[in-house]
Image 1 (cartoon, one colour):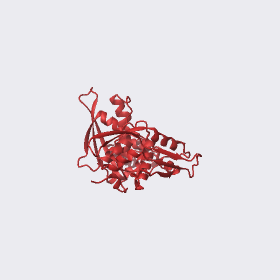
Image 2: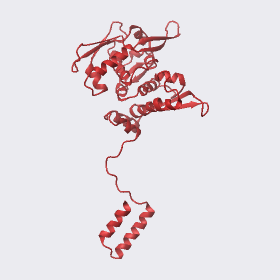
Image 3: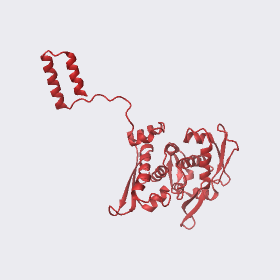
Image 4: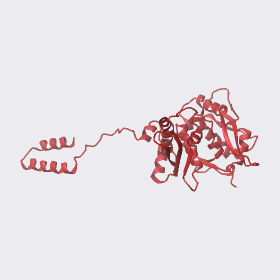
Length: 316
């Protein structure tokens, strides 16, 4: 049996345990928080001490901050770390001795330790992962390879959750899965009581998630919202996914390397042209008439200036 902790980070990303990908109750976390946690988890995994009960880790705040934004203060980063430490999530796992499903309620970070002064240049954060959570991760044998740069490129927390869900399923023999509406909402960590109308759910949750996953990640996703009839509430969601290749893969990588300014407009195809538009030529039948008129004008000895003026009027 292959264990998640025995896998190495490669060009496809670092191995994130299924138990952490499919957490629920994390609706208080923002997109930036999830991206930061992926970076911290990668550091812990790559140290080969993730399951060491006495291990903790240290990273500069500047390196975390540069990956997420150009903001020069550590305030936002410390706020993200605070939410990761305080937000209680539910981790579902299989107990090894009994084979039964259990649910652990835990924080994602055990502690964070930063310098008292806000030194943007060399300040560090020391962090730890809860001991009981490490026990679960030590036994994990399902994982998805997550690329931290993809998480940092996204602005929707639902997009990050969807991206991780399809990465977990990327190597399955089949590429379609049907989930109940309630399960899908829980896995995307949609806050309870929000976006309960189907139209709101599609517009505020599904559409932004699809836009960023398809535009920025190495995976392509399609989501079908299912109702029993046109006016019935949503009862299940069908997800299909595929690994990108060729031009589709290169386009996503190119967009990740571009500035975030204007990204959403580019992904929606709403970027306005900045170059002047070329004059539109007439359609072929009309072009034949134009050519005939020009020939007639020249045969009658019309000045070239009049001919040029006529051509410009037709191009306009």
